Image (cartoon, rainbow, N blue to C red; front, side, top):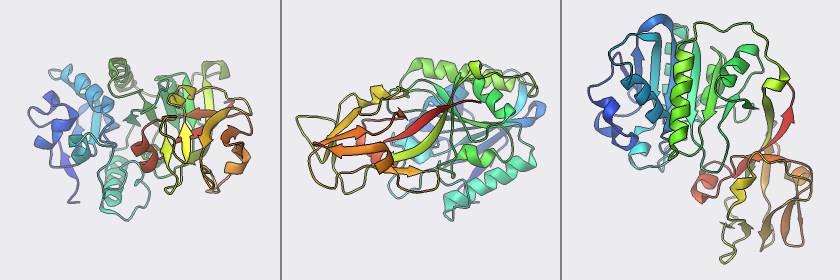
Length: 333
């Protein structure tokens, strides 16, 4: 696998480098297997998006504090999009999204992820953590793809706010959920120090976990949400977050403050300034169900039903590369 480098030890000086300097020590995506007292490894992936640096900052801090010690558990660390990290970008032009190629993707990057999964299956991976950041204002939360006890336990170690989703189904956590308990953890925005601290403490806790127990988890232990739809803006529709410079759809400058807020039916989301300025809402079956969620009357986009958004962002580049947000409903365990 030409794209992937596999190492059995950390390169000298690697842990001293910020994410944008890793390219000087790594030729590209790198999987590093480190041995520990418990042989079944924890898998940790960082920098699947090159501008989401909290995962790298957290794992390097954790490893720096354990340099002179045997790790409590073996660790397999995947450092993802090094070239995008160099440019402080989520993904470079022409690259696929490193968190959308984990399931039978024909690209070289997809073949690389298949090889990583093969190696981790062979090593009988214990659990998987994929560490990310948000661009908008969000609480720290964990995402799971299976409603099973070990997944809940792994998520609850990070946060009482847990999101269950099955689309998109080409993400890292979905692929690893077939091998072991797997979570994606969202650590706020990358420049926030407390996000790194939270991630370091989480890694430490999971590394010290000998096994998953059968201790009952109760509905009051969680705020559990189900992602119903991915909200996208069509490529042909212009967007703005500045009322003084309106576009086809103009959102409020602070629309990301609505994340994890219960929106009543009739909540105004945006102004529209041209015809055919509709949003897309892709459900778990791949259908556009935007008419179920949004109305377009009197030059405004409003919610038709009660909704709760997550990952709302005001950064157009992220909206074009990924989505505007997700819409969720609260559910019981």
